Length: 528
Image (cartoon, rainbow, N blue to C red; front, top):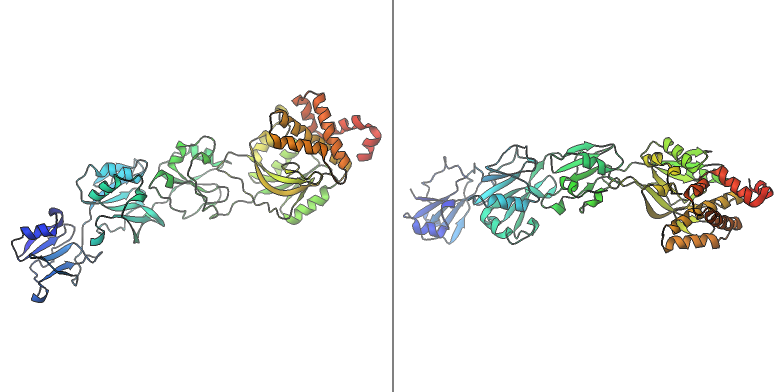
């Protein structure tokens, strides 16, 4: 019988050789079952100079060796495997306080894996250990796995689903504590080894179905039990992507559809929120096309304009699903009628004076990571060439439209009276000059709004638009355009910019009467 030494009881094989009293000595591993192993085995004379190594079921070097006391000049791996039956100690990290304790040591996850592991492992005397997580299932996991002899001091990482930076680790504790004391994030660990042939299944995220127009409200109202939740309105992914939890910046908000109807949201997001999901600094939009975004309704709004039928037909050719609201007096009432007709949370409003460009596909999707808002697209003015959000296509939030009461405020522009964003895409041509009356009233209303913005402190771009409206027009009914613009300035100053007086321009009957009083009946009859 030869002397026996266990790996965890010696500093090195050389030290064991010095201590041995026999010609050979066994180096054994405490995780291996030797009940059927022949410890009386001795190599033949021609192999006496060799260090004999037995494999485990996992590696060529299983931790079992027969070593000549005088030392070996080569290794012999030509032996049958000896099965490892025990795993290393286990540190279990809990992302959810109420989850089960499944480790020899159990600890709460705090902020990131590196600091969480360091805090707990400093209190142990382990040489090796497993680090597991309560967000993964280990029903079929083989904890007898161990690294090869060349990888002893590496940090071994097991993927969670398809996520390379997983939640399960095999750790050489002394080297881990030494190396992580010199780095800021776990990704910088000197010798990371990503185990490619073993994957750990992570549990499915909590799923939260919400009905609000903004994801913000749903996140605020959700009590996160798990580190990540899947929020959805319509479709949801059966197998969504797996987020890395190694550090805060890898715990990204991940929209899975255009506009974020279906989005993965980490628990830490709530700590940053103020007015929108974008208050959280780490958002990954590379997977936003995994689920198709919803198509928005398109509503054509007309009220007796001479060009309405032609523009309606152009719209129907481009977008057959378009609907129509016609003959509703007052812009605010017309908008509300369009909103009532829509069956989607946002709808495109196309106005009679708007000739839709064939390049515009009505495929923009509202961003639910923001607060609900309207989206304003550019239109090209047929007479003065300006391109901005005037007589344009708008993507309206339905609820904001229904909640807007323009008479109660000081804003002249229905769209601008609620939260909005400008999309610098030219979607249409403002063909408002097909008859004198529509040309004049369009210029009249637009210049009133521009002058009010200038008085409120608008910058040089708005000032430039106002100047162009009043000085430049080229094409059919150009004179009526310039007249309407300058008449608007006259009216604006005559009422000392009184908001209640200015809001009268929202109503067609009032604006017709003002025109009549200005230009006398014979001109009025000519253009009606």
